[in-house]
Image (cartoon, rainbow, N blue to C red; front, side, top):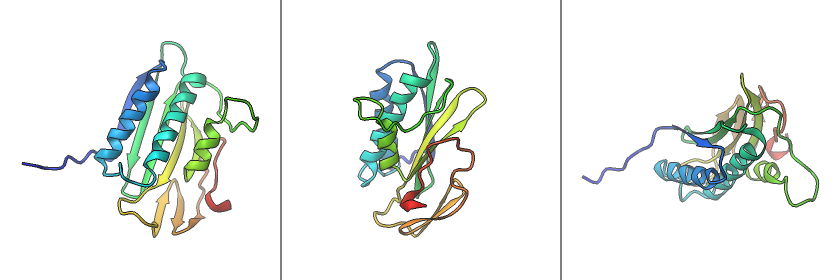
Length: 173
């Protein structure tokens, strides 16, 4: 019996406040992408880099000592969402300075089709998403977070609903 195992459309895993959590989270995301049939996708490397950046930011700035972060991945067949939940305060922002650090969210903003921050009862969720259909090519119509994507750009929606900062509207919206 050579059956393909299909992973559920929602995957989550907790990671400790430890620098080894970054490569572990990236491996978890890579295994998840493979289970969803997206490991060969043109967006796979972008997703993995953004997972690394968001987890690094959470570990550096958001996860208090003795706490963990939660990596949450979801895929509906067209849009792949990445969320990193932490219990720390503060709101991440894109830093425009040219020093060695602080460019993680610049990369997330450049590589993803949208990103933002949501508050939680304790802490925050930093998320990003990718239009990533199983079949390679342009998506005809996609709805995510209340916005609509058709072919070459986001057309409608309260895309930033529930976000406190950092939402990048694709294609200049």
